[in-house]
Image 1: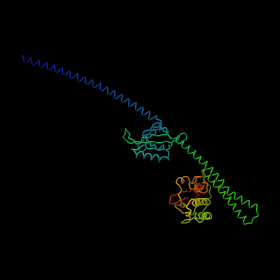
Image 2 (image 1 turned 90 degrees about the horizontal axis):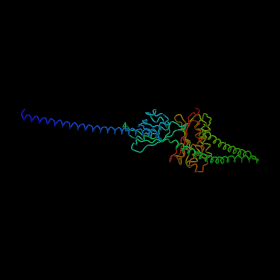
Image 3 (image 1 turned 90 degrees about the vertical axis):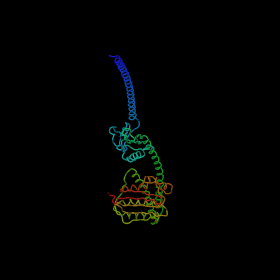
Image 4 (image 1 turned 120 degrees about the vertical axis):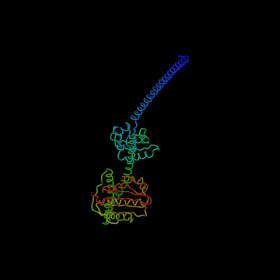
Length: 419
């Protein structure tokens, strides 16, 4: 081997040693990097495990707070179907939670409250950007025989899992408040009834004293003096009229008590013409109120009713129209037959009856503001008796009263009250 070849071989050997050292260094660096990366992965994994544990702990706390909250919570879809419900809300509905999920909440709401709940759903769905919607309603369930009342507070939201719109609803038990309100209303009603009874007893004593005093005076005149037959007949007639007046007062009071007790008034039904009954009533009233009555009828209306009861109805409605109507206008009594029923209406012009008075006008001892402020005497039983007599015929009475139109009481009767 020549010298040049030896030098070249030595150079190649040194280069190979250098490459080996370089490869060794790169392997060590790569190994170090892998170890560092592994440590970083372990730290990240530990952080993920810690985060997962924190999330699990938070979820458990949320579940505990949700399930065992002292207030009811329920999540509904837009149609009112229960998606989630906590234990308190399930307790209010008195149903196991598993049996509530996936079913409409309105199944547990009282029938008469359904419209309120549907309006609550509509308002919550339509006013998504507004404040929460609130309503108060009664559930079907009872607690110790007492209805359960709740207050719903609902907000529209988006479910994080499904992305669907849901209603987050808080359910508050307001039973104690409702019972307190009911107790206060009952107490107030009792106080009002006591005042009415005291006023009624005073009025009754005064009203009965007048006919009885007149009858007594007539009887004393008959007993003390020798009178001619015509005078005796006049006094006797006056005594009978006053006794009959007192008897009608007592009968009205007895009938009003029957109505308050929920009893139907006894009536004697016969075959009559409604037009004839109205004409007979008007003939009697003309002597007292003058010729202020107008009767309108296209034809005779025949049926089976109690003549005496209908006369009481007509006289009561007509006398009220005279007392509280416009003094210079007539009272119109209309008779017609429609759809197999008899329709009788009494109309007068004048100031209308206030809406708040219309709600209580048919209740015993209730009088309108105009009647109380005026000088017309009364017990507040007339319209109560009118309604009772009409309902005894399986009929109904309706009131319409407005400015410029006057007041109309409309009686709707079957043609045959025997059935």
